[in-house]
Image 1 (spheres, rainbow, N blue to C red):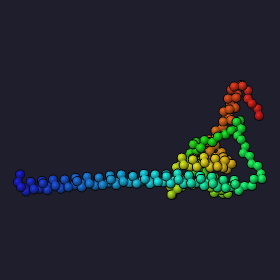
Image 2 (image 1 turned 45 degrees about the horizontal axis):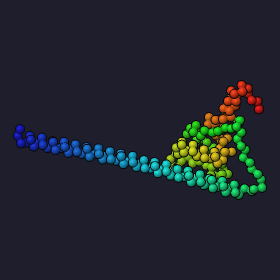
Image 3 (image 1 turned 45 degrees about the vertical axis):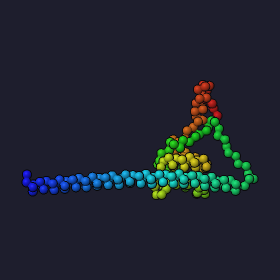
Image 4 (image 1 turned 90 degrees about the vertical axis):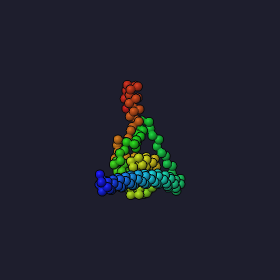
Length: 184
């Protein structure tokens, strides 16, 4: 081999090594950008979830305060009694059985039904993002505790599968024990 051929081989070798390192640098750069983007989105999701939970806590405390104020403002001349659930007809609601679409319908119906009490409204979007199902279920459960007279009929209409009747279980167990059906 003469010196000119050796020079050309070395030039091609240097070009190849330079191209290889350029590709390695670009791949490392792209991987770094992707990792940074993932950390950034996780950080944003954490802040959104943290903000949602803080807003939920603030909403619940505001609702409790407003309900306490309304209860204090009501006149004490009339007696109000809360009916105790009877064991034969006690019905419980399992909010975890409500799916996302139904939860959104329930939230919308509660908003329409609670025009006199805006504290019962359930937000379906926070920071222009839809809230998750678990958050909606927790809010529905909370509103159910605050205003069962408004929320229970809505759930009964839109999510009848969420109702479980303990009274039926009690009646069935009474029938099994006595062998007779109780007529009321």
